[in-house]
Image (cartoon, rainbow, N blue to C red; front, side, top):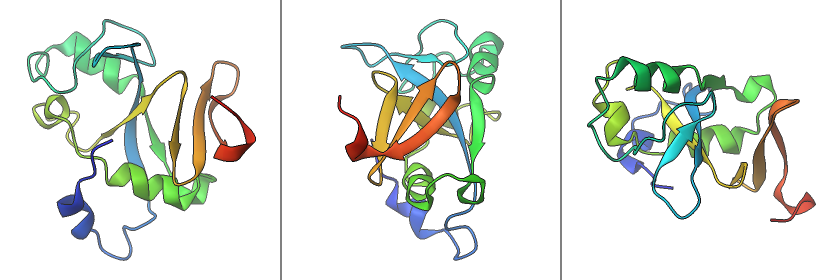
Length: 134
């Protein structure tokens, strides 16, 4: 995960812990490519080649959601995601510029000591990272 200290430094006290828009993607094994949670073709977030593709952008937007500390998401997770740099593909698209990627590997990511998991039957869930393995 790449931290964007410049973006984090610009946050006001009111914005810290507020909601953050994310696009949930799953990294392909042994690859820099990710697949939007809603499905679709693999994309490289580091490339701007597909930034104007309506299919790619729509697939990413279909995989988006808003994380809020007030909505039960650990505030440290919201803060950690907010500090993730906006990838080149997102920066090149006016539709995706305000989003951060939430890149799941093997169906989860650990942020701020919390495991964020996607489960088909329950959606995005959080639990203490030390309760599960792998």
